[in-house]
Image (cartoon, rainbow, N blue to C red; front, side, top):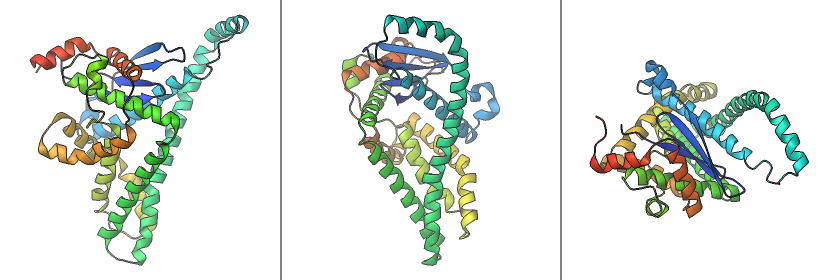
Length: 319
């Protein structure tokens, strides 16, 4: 077995885990049973080697993660669309119409998913990238220092992001999602430590992880400050355009950093990872045992963890 980096995401009452050849969605349904859906998946980087080079692979991975994340989030919500038990007549009608509408629903969901992704990206770019740049540009009326203006823009971007996270963390559904987020991290940490995936073992591990998407977003904010320092202009439209055009570069650099930090445990990587890990105090919460069970089931959907932890213990991965 080769050493792999399992990644995941919290969804509505569940966890998605992505392995080397597939991703699994595990959800605790309203009847309290756990349902696991495994989807075979081969990344674009594996299919096209030219997309697997440094920086480029970060952009590709970011787009793929957004697509899979949004898809599994939508899939998880389907389990809770109608929690009422239908009567026998309704059940018969439902079964007869399911087969007919299955293909149409699949095509409709794909279009809706792509549309949702595009709208979400536009809103995120507008709020977290363009708005801080727009507001910071007015500081040129007070100072001619490009450094100070870009620094103020970066600080404003961080404050908006942290404020957004702190605000949504007050919502009850989001609180539970953050608990599942904690379960996801604890389970991955337990696996990478070479411990059997039992509720008792998983509970002992930290809910923070260096490869977390929260850390990635935070690193994007930090690296954007550095990159934008090289864009010297007080012209508003050039400033805003540069923020859009440089997004792939920033995403690619951020991915390489997160990738390095996730594979190394030294003083440098630990110091640089500290801010992102701190932000995870907002986006992860301690899970209950039921949530940990869901996360374990999700891992089981993508990898034989018994063999994996044995390789960790004996350091017997393929070289």
